[in-house]
Length: 378
Image (cartoon, rainbow, N blue to C red):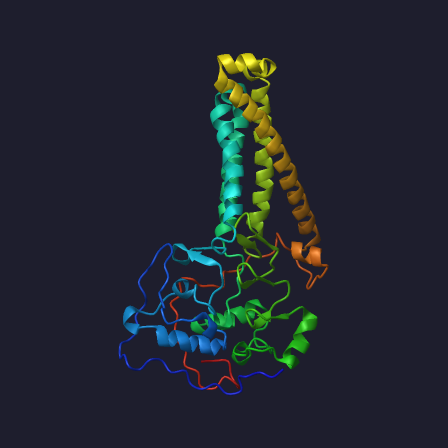
């Protein structure tokens, strides 16, 4: 296989508009630029072709866009979404909607019954348990949101590395390719793997991603749901609508542990309420209770159902927490255990998270290339 980047012609920026590009305005939430002439089928020619298409689409009078405003364009970002002006990153829309709704319902409905139906009884009987459950619930929701909206370690695609000044050098350093074959600008511009370079890098755990068309570092994996490569990817979690990788694995681990503890306290609290005099007598004389106090009978029946469902979920979540504790001790990811392929020995939970490589707030710059064959500057 041969590369197609022997000589790169200068990249011309629109010269018809003699206006100095200004930084774009700050845009929030679901901010994105509209490019009506951008066709996804045209963006996979090469990273340089993507940059050329973007240069032709940008009107300098509107200001140069930031990364989070062009992230949705095919060939630049993936299926993941940058929200709140690039402050948050989560998974693709609609794909995991049913799982997300299921997660929030299974978390909030038992807590609502616990505090509203059993809260008064527990405050007089065991206020420590009630306060402990409230703290654990807040911790669980916090870690859940952090896992859902934290960049898991997405590796920018080659086109984005060309558009953000200094990003190509930073990515090469993070991947361990700085100053080495595979980490130069000429290697970044290639749309096909260089057999000589890959022959040297593959024994070290590197791989060529045929989706992002770039070199993939050891322990990284391409997520087909998010359509991007993630550093030390563990798995894609549909219940949290995000990949679990290098930068949010700790949040996910503590979320699973705190969720198990919260479920345990809910089961204990609801069981104490069910064994109290009112609900216990109502269960013993269910027909009489339905006639005289139907709301208490309904609450008691719902309480027993809730204990059974939460107990089953707690066993599943606790098993998952135990499995990830095993992974932490072994220093492996879920994907490595399931596939049996260990690319490089390293830690997981206690490893450095590293900075986010997306640089969502950075204003892009259209580069001008002279010759990318013998250098890595532009």
